[in-house]
Amino acid sequence: MIDTILFLLVDGLTNGLVYALLALSLVLVFAVTRVVNIAQGEYVMLGALTLADLLQGRMPGTLYLLAGGLLLCVLLDAPRWRRDWRRAAVVAIGLILAAAAAIALTRAALALQLPIIGMMAVALILVAPLGVLIYRFTVHPIPNATTIVFVIISVGVSMIMQGLGLLIWGANPYPVDPVAAGGFMLGPVFVAYQSVAILVVALLSMGGLYLFSEFTLLGKALQASAMNRLGAQFCGIPVDLAGGLAFLLAAAFSALSGMLLAPLITANYEMGFMVGLKGFVGAAMGGLVDYPLSLAGVMMVGGLESASAYLASAYRDVLVFSLLVPILLWRNARQRADAR
Image 1 (cartoon, rainbow, N blue to C red):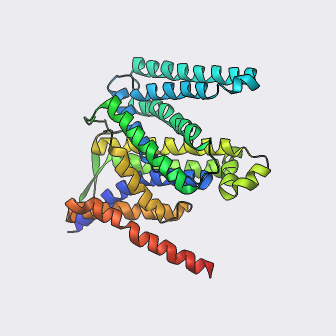
Image 2: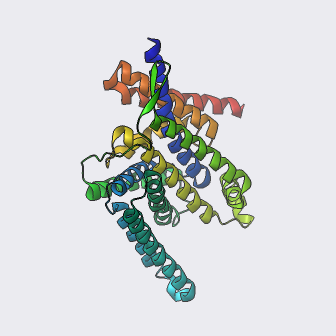
Image 3: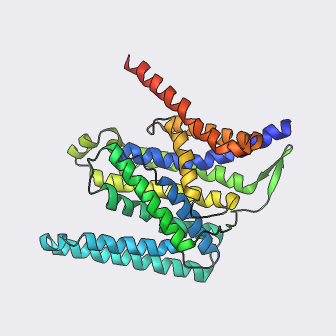
């Protein structure tokens, strides 16, 4: 019995840490841009499948998405050529060079057959800019839209990204090697090195985001935009840049989450949606603005998912999503108490 409880604790902690990176992404995006990004889980899928392609020596389909997105940016900037052709030319050349650099980097990584850590870094470089492109296409044109409009848009983005994932990678799952194979015995429980890697990466990511927010100018711009977007704008902070940066970092954290999760469940085109919703359930505990409470929420989700997979595996997802109801009731009661 004790062995089972310890196993469930380790499994729940591993799941919770994967969801923690996703919750971090959701909170960051909502705090800075007020966008409830339902599509956040799709970066999990893109990170996992990009890493799978790189490890198997193929040019990742993400590269085509990135190149196509950069080309679309050039086309959308076409009206700027009439007003300021010099600046438009600089932007267009920069985007074309960025696409060329991404292709060259991928070719070099495949030719050198980099180890898995190197391939993860390349996958991160390819996936993270997609967050900025999605921000450019969906949020940047309508920054003052209501939250419900952004929710509807993000649902549409999620469906498009899933469709593109199916078109590029097909419906078959792809195996992904773990960062380190094997494991060790912790008392009566076997702990995989992959779980340790997830723990280390999650802690480093959260610590890195804290240091970035507290001790860098860009991080302080993010904080200012999160606290008061209009006030930050009056103070000369480019809130559009802050929004793009939030989407960039969020895409990177989510892609990292997918790369760490893929060895445990295999990578496929529809893995991101469910993972994203579970991360959302946990992040809802913090109201999408409170990092510590959101982390507590995802740990609860991870623990409940492990316990329900052991006790009633057929109802695992039902039990996890049912957790959203008491969380929202608790959030509502807390807000009323604060208002008094």
